[in-house]
Length: 227
Image (cartoon, rainbow, N blue to C red; front, side, top):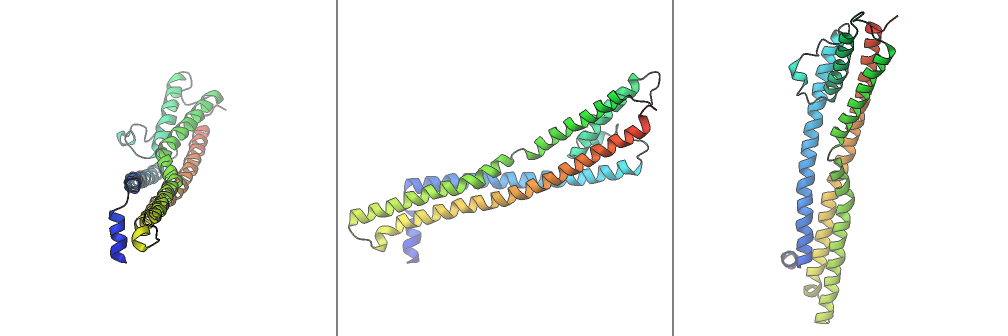
């Protein structure tokens, strides 16, 4: 029996083999995306925690890290936010020649808008390629289902040709149907799990970015706002 099944798989029709090849390619791409995204988010979280620790150690000087060259290539989304807001803060301080250490409400709003833009840019960067996982998790079962239908059709054709429903007649089509179904699920399930996990991690990082933005604005307001 086992020999018949494995032989049937090897002898699967061109459609079954094409579907298996397609699902294999999708699976390789999905796992590559999963690996890259997990590595990227882990690095971003580590860098963000390190940056926040240093920043909060001396809140009396929000510009303490502005000239640190490590921030320019940091994977931390908070680093990008910090640099965007600090550039605006430095610009406004230089612009206020009469009272360089005092900001107007308009200037403070400008810094806040820079933080909001930076958050939007970082969220887009964090979510990049997630559409691959979402698409794979939803489309792969249907690709496998197509192979299922094709394999069952092949089994019925074989019965029609041989005029009998023996195992030798239906095994190739049924094996093709089952293998493509399993392959579709094997691609979809990891993609779905990874997608949900990564979305949850990104939501947590977005909340962290929002908190940092509020913290930065609060510090700048206390130190630089005009009376």
